Length: 77
View 1 (cartoon, helix red, strand yellow):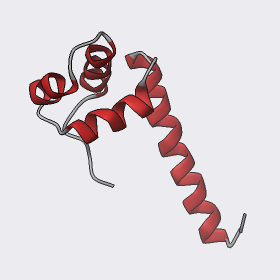
View 2 (tube, rainbow, N blue to C red):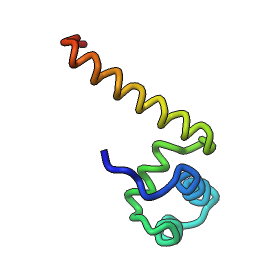
View 3 (cartoon, rainbow, N blue to C red):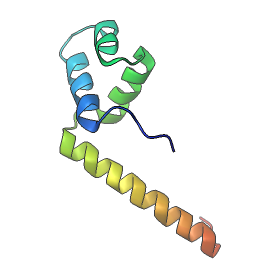
């Protein structure tokens, strides 16, 4: 999986700027991302603070590892 060049705090900051009423074009340009990326961040991180985003990423990584381990054991869902 490709590592993001933007930190969780940058993503949350961008989403909060977008939610505060600043246009998507201005926010996207300011953070060096496309509007599509900005709206993807919004759909995933809207209403979260930085600690919640970090916890979400930890849980996603743990889930990925568990799925991989179960696939190695031959467990099917």
